[in-house]
Image (cartoon, rainbow, N blue to C red; front, side):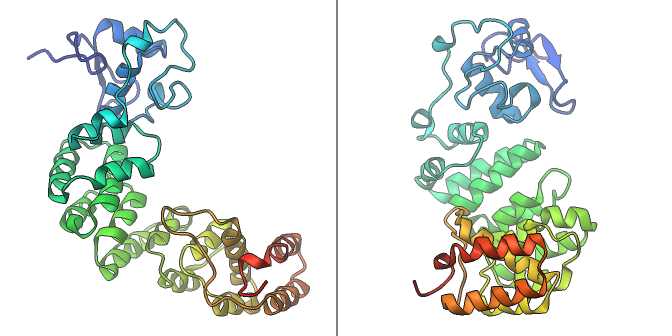
Length: 329
């Protein structure tokens, strides 16, 4: 069996196999890096080299122990000359899609500056690099990041690739990344229906935890889905999905008038819109906005019929921020 280089330093020969974080994809390390790994004292480039292969979220690599630049934050021994072994920067890898993919995998989040670096490459070149890496790993986190890059940089160019990725669901591809890639890369009908079918195969608890995936499509069809599938408990997740799905005032008003459970979804959705948290380039907002008076009247009428603390606190918060939701000031 041929020897291979240490996955951390990439200079010494690998001597030890460490399966503690993942027995299916263990670390292959030299003796010195093995010791530094367990002391949480990897040098920045050593952390980077392991994170690009295994993902930064592995226990011994995750953000409790290392900063995003690979600096050790809780070492149990002194890190050996960390400044002499820096991790690559975005500027250093942005000319090469293979190196940029390594860098992207090590990031805690897929940021706008990383997305901009991917946008500079020709799409077919990017697709080739992403497809090759997807085929050579079963790491679900790495596959998820590859799909996230596809959604941002490839759009319809990656349609067949995303269809292929669906064949690996649910074993090694999470629905959250598939939904983003499907919304961006597939025709709406195909992508939305694939995600709906995946959700409907889940038990209720798992369905409630995963239904946010429909929000990737920003479609009122997700509001129809809520009406057909709503079940208790009515958590804020229902409202967040509604806020992401082009909720309009006529439907929100109808939900308020219908009473529980949809009235609670309407309140949660209006509060989510008020928080104004962008989802990438998408900013949730209320469509077909009412006047302030119409909104006040509807909320006051509903609160009088269902005066529980959740409703009273929710309506109070919404009424204090009516300008976000209405077309007058």
